[in-house]
Image (tube, rainbow, N blue to C red; front, side, top):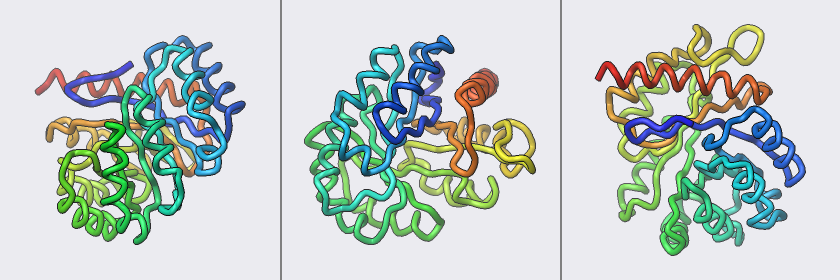
Length: 246
């Protein structure tokens, strides 16, 4: 578990159904990581077919906590929005993330705000570029209430420096930052030299008082549970050392 100064460190767990979720949770349980925060990443089909407790019970029973539920490509016209709000409201983090938004999503945000406000949950929208981030911000600044926010994934940008230029102007509205790293052979350690300069990113987040979720999640290459847990420990130690210097 890692929580410092309003920052929650979690790992992304991607599942495509109840059985796979139970298998992943069992591996986490075997690793002895009670109280671990996880981001539960499901597709729209899994969200539609699984019951609320099919998604939540395995995690709760294992003593872990769901920081957020992330879904890709949700159709704005479906009843899944309310179901996502219900699921999020029953998690420890009370947060849902919708990735890969389009123009229809931006148009629907006013209605979605009302749904999530009803269930006292938070909805984060995840843009894929600097342009989408600017468009999203223009919509969010007109909608008050603290229910809506931004999630950013570093892998959507070619470098940490580019990512920071997009991230920092909107950091007050950002409630999830996903980090990863890659080398010539695929997934690389978060803190080692690679595609991304994560020590720079983490120092910037801490120095600017970022408050929200920091998620370790790899989109481009498969990673094992032991790998993610090792990175969680390493990043947690690094964050604590940064906090001590402030």
